[in-house]
Image (cartoon, rainbow, N blue to C red; front, side, top):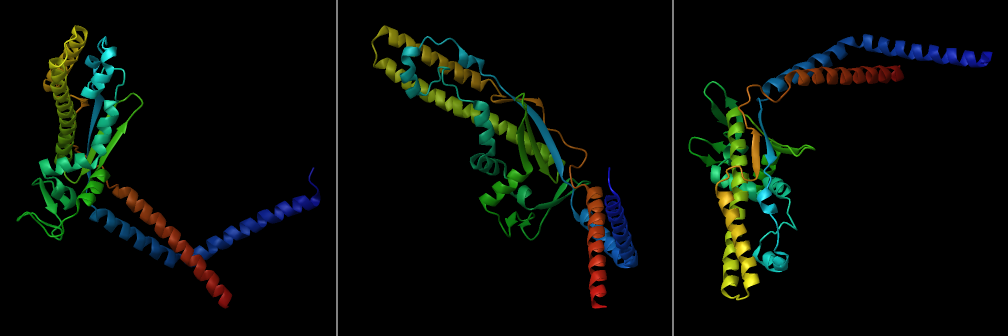
Length: 306
């Protein structure tokens, strides 16, 4: 059981805490005009900032990796493994994760450079400051780019464009292997169009690379056939050539070569950001905190002076 001194100490501490809170509320009440001023100014400033920010739209797409079951056929060519490696032929015993490679290609500078050269996305990426919904027109920053004459006044570097592109382009993959791609832009139509281009380009890039590799392999294997007389090796080489020809044929007839679209890009109807209500709420809270601190500091400064 607590003795009398312990009870007195606990009661005294509670009374001191109550006095401290009452004093704090009293100080804030006395400086309510200054506190209210900070809240009003901060709230009005947050409203102005939120209204000055242009809307950003986000288009998304869901993809799944295309399984390459054709590459896993029976492999009676173990004895030709070294030759196949030289020719660039995969026998299935050392598979490269094409999905991982494709995702890394999407993040690469090389892929970004191919996009800006083919589709001329640099100006809409770096110089647009807003979008006119009624006329579906982009509004450019005149200090950076003259849209009428198609002239840069302050042209960004390739590195700056790449960094900006990475800010608006997002890639994620869940535990089931489903890949989510998204693009953010002032125009919902451009966000959708760019995402279509990106998916098309990554499939084309992977397909063209595999076709070129297979064609080089066929050329090399044919040279080996001409210089080899052993029937067993010739039979193995013919099988390797056949597998590469099948790869070329499959690639040419498969539009969705690396990634298959399960939910295509869309034109978003609702803005993704900014959240103007949240900005205003944060402005109010920030004004209340700064105002309270100023009132308390002012009170103790004048208290010490007197």
